Length: 245
Image 1 (cartoon, rainbow, N blue to C red):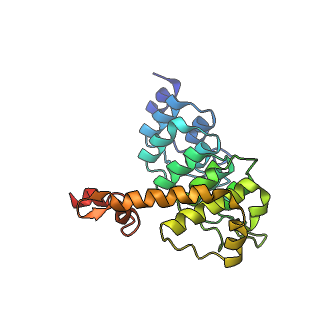
Image 2: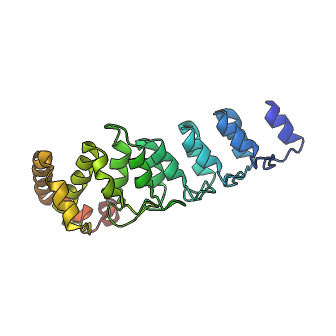
Image 3: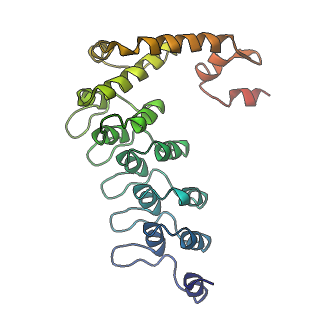
């Protein structure tokens, strides 16, 4: 037996907090100790307790990129949209870390893509502010999951797309999203001047042609009585074909 297991067997409270509001589970995650973390979770540690900054174990796991324990936290009921004291969610932390994989995992678990923190920043605002050179995969993931580009303003009164001058690569990502949405007939409600400015960046003509070619293929590919394009655009449900079988 480990010392932790022995203490639990003797009646130690796994949800006891210290003067920082941290539980043993918080510390196990800070130390990136998989074994102790799993023991605590199996011993019914409250996975959604916040410390004095309201950071839950999931906040800390994302902040410190403790990927190995994420599935165990989710299996134990970790909530993905809880705020810390600055109203940051785990997805804000993933965006701060510029992590494509963590952002995708949280979004797949139901993270709200446009949730705002105390600075009125969405995760997309945060990802853009942390963007360096061409590290834009996290930005792309958020855009692919429907993050709003031109409607939600942060504490500076700026929408994500209004930071487009930050880098040419960021302009590329925004225009890429516009092209994909236009090709799929999805409404973005973007300011016409913004669209015009972005389309002046003309390096994506080949990308647009590729999108249109792929769409032609999707409209020919049949899944039951529907074509592949309908499954992803009209029904907007990739599991549609399974429901029909």
